[in-house]
Amino acid sequence: MLTRKQHELLSFIDSHLKETGVSPSFEEMKEALSLRSKSGIHRLISALEERGFLRRHHHRARALEVVKLPENMAHQALPVRREGAKPAPAAPGFSPNVIRGDFSSRLPGVRAAQDAAAISMPLYGRIAAGQAIEALRDDGVHIEVPMAMLGAGEHFALEVAGDSMIDAGIFDGDTVIIRKGDKADTGQIVVALIDENEVTLKRIRKRGNSIALEPANAKYEPRLLPVDQVRVQGRLVALLRKY
Image 1 (cartoon, rainbow, N blue to C red):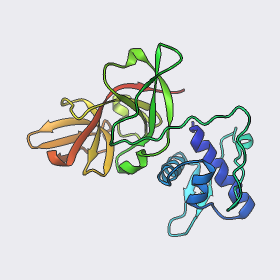
Image 2: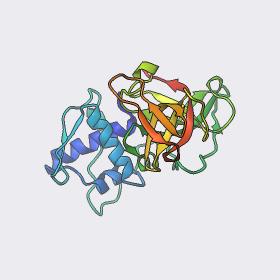
Image 3: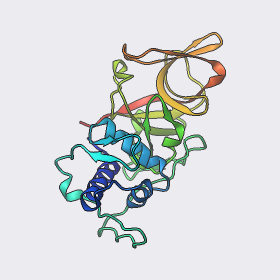
Image 4: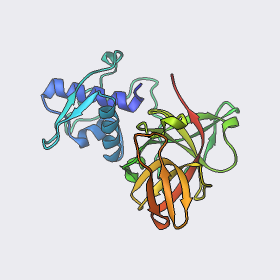
């Protein structure tokens, strides 16, 4: 299942290829999706590539290939926006719901949803080992989370990429709810920042002056790192899944 932004980007790339014969630039894609930075485009392209919808031809400039389209894509095509042209007006009744997120600084305040039994919180982006933290600092959407799943403190949501935590019941495409904080007990699943550059979701183990970040999948090896190279950003408190 693709997110709305993934649908929009895939549709725009497909339309651009059919009309011009070349893939759009990152600037054109950023403008078409009304994003503020190109890092969000990198994240969306990686997600589409992982799901088998796009193929990147490396060492070739602007080389994207649409491998397949979802069945419901035909009526969702985004028009190709020519350089210098004014953006097309939004469809009647459409109002984008986005928020500027900053993963490393204070999170935006959580607002009460219309339904008092739910809270609306920022959904930042995809989290996977090896992904630069800048990829999470981009426009996102709010999601509604039942209050019963939360406790005290600030929370944010992240979309999971990959299968490194499947034995803990966390699958690719799931949404994890994270309670912001810099402390965690051994055995808890946390969002960890490595060397101020890489962010990952793993189980944490404290071993003397080192910290082990353990996957929940036998295909992957734990990572043992010095304490000063790992900074906890928050811990897992809940999980959402769409079927």
